[in-house]
Every structure is written in structure tokens, then in C-alpha cells.
Image (cartoon, rainbow, N blue to C red):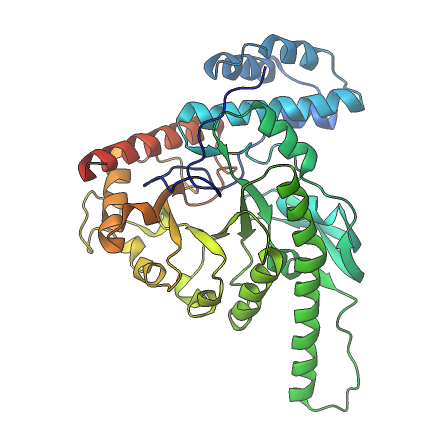
Length: 400
């Protein structure tokens, strides 16, 4: 039976809730999901984990998952069911933690880059690349004009929409990151070597711009249009590659605008760990961006306090405050690179400092620094519970 959804608090049509809480994107995939999907044998610990979290998250149907796991090896339809079980568990984890807006921790996708490229035309896979946490994704090359083969988040969204109670925020990888993480074997080729260096640089820049904007207009935008047609109201554009080339930040901003311009939804973006000063002034042009979700806790002190000296990780936030179109700041208050569990009081002080800088709690949302896929579910759940508890302390301190 579909669960009754909470009233919208941020997406189009709903009021902005001060200090709204949400996740950023990914969660770790449970061992039972990974092994059973790959056809690997499951241990009793894997099955026990599925039972434990089913009970802890109040998933009454979980015995059916246990039966499915014991039926391994799984066929195609059973694997699809397995992905949905993992999705359901992740939604319940985020809702049980108390978040105002949720998704499913990207449980049904392979990986944020690979999932997009695998459903697009014009790419050929070239090999595996190791990510910072010793996981891998398949890097591709653009070998022809790129375009969307088929909308690739529709089934996922429809299922999550049917089971979630909280407001939904759909994470989707952005155009600049897709282009930046790909080889380009189509848009730019070494031409006349007799050309001056400046002319060749200009040709490379022009080709790069065509590649990025083709991804934006021909892949990301139509995929978002399909989501909106299904009822998606808030889409987060993930751009971990945005500041890879500091001289291309204007192109990053242009690609965001090309992806979302004129679409009827709320759009935000996630900026991954970086020197955030680099984004200014380029993001002044991103006027359709309602919120920037930015990681700060990883740079911050673990000491309590709300003074400028106590919160060194948040020194750049006045620049976000001063953007003329007054976007919301998704304030990273939980470090995703450590098992350290932030206390509610530390979360509270980070929030209170930001509210003091912005002088408007409606322009602050509360988030982890990034997706929590690098942490176990036990650690991720504890961090999120304390994040919600710290947000309540901040609301109480502010009289909200």
C-alpha cells in the first residue's frame, strides 16, 4: 500500500522550510544486494544483515527478501526485485533517520557516471578507473554525437515515489562531470599542426564547449524532462567534476543553465570537495539554481562554538550568501570521510554559525558533506540521526 506523503516543503508548490534536512546522494550498497546481484554466494552474515535492517527499519515485508536471498542464484526478474528491495531499505533508512527529503541512496544504479553513459548514444567503453575509495567505474569515450538513448531514471523514480513518505529529491549526474570524466574522440581531433598554439587552444576550447553542451542538451535535459513528466519536483544536479579545470567554470555554469532552462521543477546542484572560492564569480550566472549543496564539515574543527574562529571550515559561506539571486545553501555538517559520529551539539553549532552569517534560516538546509556510500549503514544511520537531532537543537535555539 502506498504511504501517505508528507506535504512538500521545498519543491515547486511548497513553502521553504527553515533548516530542512536531506541527504546528498549515495549510500553504500548492502553486501546481500551486491553479492546476490553478482551471483556470488551469500554468507549467513549477509542474510542476517537483511533481517536486522528489515526489523530495525520496520519493513514488515522483509521475510520475502530473506526468501529471495535464499533462492540464489537469481534470474533477471529476481535481480530486478533485489534492486528494489535495496531501494526500499535505503528509503526507510533515510526516513527513519528523520530526514525531510529523501531518495534511495542510488541503490538501483551501477555508478553515477556509468549509469548515465550506459543509457546514452555516442559513447564506447574504454576500461575501468579506480575511485578514491577503491571502487571502480567504467570510463568511456565519446566517439560520435552524444544523445539520450532512453530515459534512465524513470523506473527508479516511479518505484521510489510509490513507497516513500517523505518529499523526494532526485540526484542526477550533471553534464560537465559526464563530459569531463569521458575521453573525447569525436568533438576535438588534432588538426593542422602548422596552426599557431593560440589557434589550437581556441579550437580545443570550442570543441570542449560543444561536447559539454551536447551532453547538457541531448542527454541531461531530456532525461530531466522525462522525470518531471512523472511528477519529479526537485532534481539535484551532481557535479563532482565541476572545478577540475578552473578556467572552465563558466562552461560548467553554462551547462547547468542549458540543462534546466525553462523546465518546471526546482533545481539544485551539489559541489563536491574543492576550493569553493574558485566557483566565484562563475556561479553568479546560475540563477535557476535554487540551492547549492556544499561540503564543509571535512574542513572544519571538531570543537563546539559559533564564533568565526570556531568554524574555520565555513569561511567561504558569505560568498554564497551574497549571490544576487539568493539561493539556499545546503550546509554540509557531517563528514562523510570519517566514522566519527558528530554530536548533535556540534551539528547545532555549525548550523547556528551559518544562520548568523546568512541572517535567514530559510536560506539554510542541513545535509551531509556528500553521499555516504563510503560509510557503513550503521555509521551512516548514526550520523544522520545526530544530524537531525542537531537540527532540532538549532531550531529550538532560534525559536523556530
